[in-house]
Structure formats: structure tokens, C-alpha cells
Image 1 (cartoon, rainbow, N blue to C red):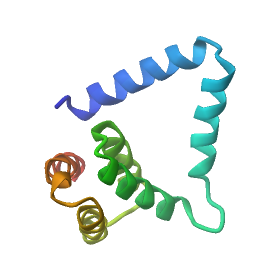
Image 2 (image 1 turned 60 degrees about the vertical axis):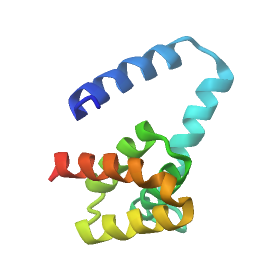
Image 3 (image 1 turned 120 degrees about the vertical axis):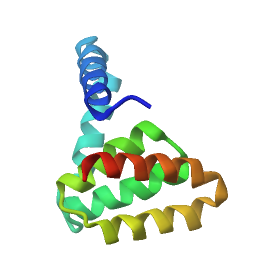
Length: 111
């Protein structure tokens, strides 16, 4: 697994390339994704926590990494991370375990 610096560099580079291609549908989807995590009835921290659970259940390691980082930036505590991980595991089942390992590895990188 690439380290966080490599992950962020690749993500930034490819997002710039994708958005720079000028496809209206893709650009609107990316904008919608960003807007979905803005504070509203739920705060940004809570939305990032939900995003992390969903990413674990969907088993997307890139999304898990992104949301672990964002949750960390939003002040999610280690205890909260463990509860997020437990919800993702219960909802997703044992197939989530490899992704839980990678999520924990990312968390360890940040702390």
C-alpha cells in the first residue's frame, strides 16, 4: 500500500486531470460529492464518519484512506474510530476484515 504522501499526490494529480478534461457530468458529480460533506443538519465530522462506514462496507480502500484522513482532520478520536470500524464490520461482515486492517494501518500512520 502506498504511503499517504504518495496516495495524496496521485489523488490530486488524477483529480486535476479528470476535472480538467471538462466533462460536465463528471465535474458535476465531483461537485456534488464535495457538497454532500458540507455541514448541514449533520456536521462535517459526522458526515465523514458516515462516509468511512460506507467505504468500509463497500470495501473501497482509496475511499477508506480518504475518509480516515478526513475524520482525523475533523478531530475523530481513536475511540470513535474503533466504534466506526466496529459498525462497518458488523454491517459489512467478515469480508470487511482486510479493509479494517488497512484502515487501522492508515490510522496508525496519522497518529
